[in-house]
Image (cartoon, rainbow, N blue to C red; front, side, top):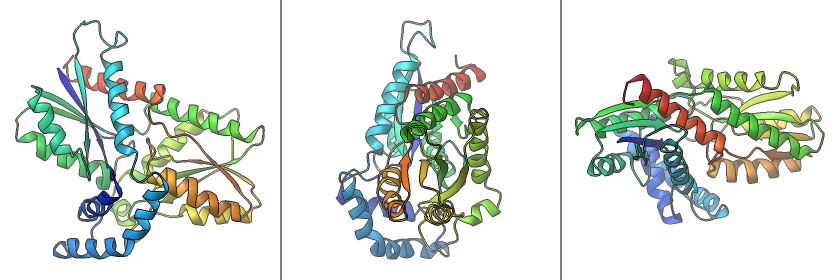
Length: 326
C-alpha cells in the first residue's frame, strides 16, 4: 500500500490555539527570518503580543477557528476514494491510504508520518497543497517531512510544484467562469490575489512569483475567446520585512481610481478556504471596496471540487507510475 501525505500549513482549531499556532509559524526561520537566529523566538513573541487580539478577533469573525483542518481532511477522504476507485485501478484491494500533515498545528507532519508507519506503510508520497513552490511554504513542509520520514528508512517521493498542471487549471477555470456569472452579463475586472512572500526570497531565486504568473498565463489561455481585464496583487503580509507588491489593498484603491465598479477576486495561490479568504477577502477587502463604490465578489475556493480532487489524483498516479510503484 502507498501512503499519500497531504502537506499544508494548518490553522488553529480554537481561539485558544491561535497563540501557539502563531508562535509555531513565526518561530520557523524557513518562512520568515526575524533578525539573527538567536533572536527569532523573542522577536516572534513580540510580534505575536502585538497582533494576537486582532488575529483572535479575525478568527472569531469566521466561526472561532480555521476551517483548514476540516477541509483538508475532506480533501484527503475524497482523494483516497478516487485513488482506489476503478477509474485508476483494476485491483480489488485498496492501493492508497491518504493522511494529512500540517506544518504549524495539529495534526503535525511528524505525527502523520508516525501514524502511517504504525499502519504498516513503507512507501509515502508527500503532496504539497501549495501549487506554487516556495522555500517558505512547500520547502519548509518538505524539510519537516523528510526529517520525519528518514528515521524510518522507508521509500518516499515528493510532489512539490504543480502550478501548470492541466487538471488544476481546469479546476480554476471552472471556478472563475462560475464567478463571472455572478455579475449577470457585466464583465468585471479580475483581480488575482496571491499570498505575499518576503521580497528577499524572490531576490535569492525563489520561483514562487514566477509560478504564480505561470498559473495566471495558463488560465488566460482558457479565456482567449472571452478575455477580461486583470491585475495581480499580494495579500496577507506579516512581520517587519519587505514583501511582494502591490498589496491587494493598494490594488483595490488603484482600480477604484479608474472608475471600476465590479471586481472578481480570484485567490490564486489558495486551494482551500481559511482566514485569508473568509476574513481578509470576504470581510476586510469587501468592506473596503464597498466604501470605494466597488462591488467585490470572490471565486469559490477549490476545496473538494471534483475537478480539483481529480487533479490531485492524477499527480499521485503519475508520480507512482514514473517511479514504478504501480
